[in-house]
Length: 405
Image (cartoon, rainbow, N blue to C red; front, side, top):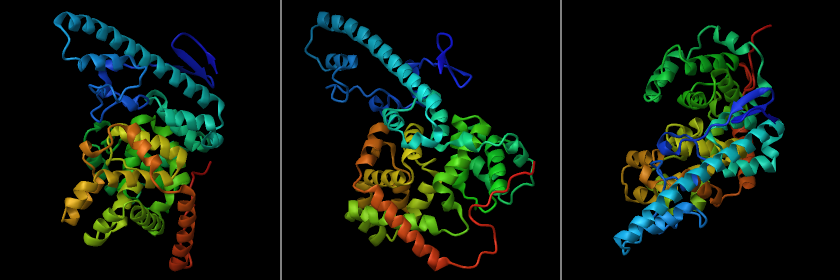
């Protein structure tokens, strides 16, 4: 890695421009590196007592000014000038922090082997510090080792194969799921092209709406072919078993989620699974098979994906537990199973933690042990396989059909 010209960085013979964030339009940004000071509405959360701000933040002095209602007009005028200076300093500080984080990530992307990235302490620290939106897809590609799977020319060849049986369902879901992203809605668009290629390459995968949601989220961040190989890697590393011809894996994880919720919050578990007779599967299937796409605001979703791609499936359980906890009071007040399920699956914005980082903090603090969860998962998977065992007459779950050279 070497600097090329001012404002640019060269990594692996490619030039990357270091983007200066426009903090005047924070509501349009998809970055979350500074989400610790961002509210749900993407506005800066400057509370009157400054309690949410770092003690060394210039904005904390502005917050103190806002609460000083006893100042004279002259004092207020002077404070306003000082507040404007502090605001400029804060913007400069945030810009510098953004650029430093961007540089650190570009250094890591250029120096850490993708296959070792999820074992790297440096990568872990940077992941939890935040991922600038300008490098997010490169980070996701590194965490999934997507580039290692690239076979030149294959993506185009896969797209020219006979249309998959699920095409009509995919076209319907594309229209329904991306009402606010017209670039993804076309029947000739990238979502359909990506899923057509993937489902012809891995014919044993059963189509579900979650595949469209995941593909769409990747395409919002990454160029089409890069998104395809990240998708392939993400599926193989983490969630492909959810889309097998049997529902064994998602059944197992739903069972574990039910147990986890019962351990963490037995009153809510009793209300949902006992009184209202809602199955854990009806919560886990839509959340886990979509990786929460369509259920969380974009800035929250991006941070969940950042951590999930590093931590793996256990982090999905942690996020799920936090989201149920957010709606705890409304669940307890609800008598309708349908209303309670809708409340859980689509948490109201005002019920979510105040920022994406707050959600991540709560998820990491959830009282479950990842190692124990993995052990129970393996045990239940073995039981499920024994119960559903039958001679296979179709392709195995890891069949891949690539074009001939």
